[in-house]
Image (cartoon, rainbow, N blue to C red; front, side, top):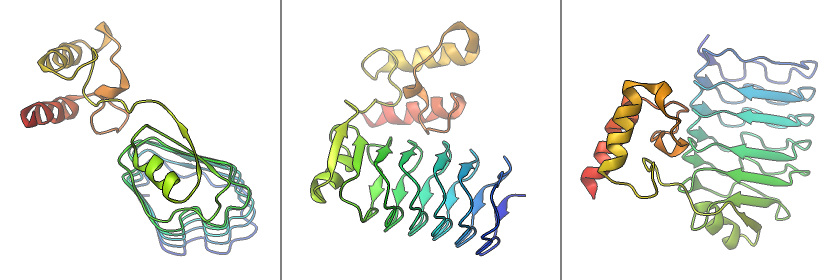
Length: 212
């Protein structure tokens, strides 16, 4: 199973538990709309898109785990999830569309790990605290909408191993890939934020160095 289709489990008010398979890549529009008894959901790592109104009005939803891999959260995806108190958006997410977390009446905090994440008008509740990096789009959004912002410090520089991105980082990454057990590299080496450090990250680091 790679996709939960549009309206697949819409208005299944008696549904109390869902376990999404690791093979899943897409959650369709209104897939779990009005599933008012679901309390938690874990989005698998291969999912890239959470569809429009996918979890609309899941009023008992208390916990959402969005793993690295998701790149896009569509409009109204979690609208009306009134039991949801906090959300952690991983670095892989590049865009959160309008009202994705609006009308979540008990939402207290939203953490946005990607400092360049494109944010539309994602919230309707101004008492939420937004956590993000200094100079990030999260900070700009919070200031624009008069929402409390809590800094996570300076944003990590992708590809940096030793404090400054350079050819040294390229060399260290090459050595690591030859013998992964020889050294624990920082998560900044994960250039594409997919939770893995591999040859793809090496290629992306080369591209980044060529720009400089």
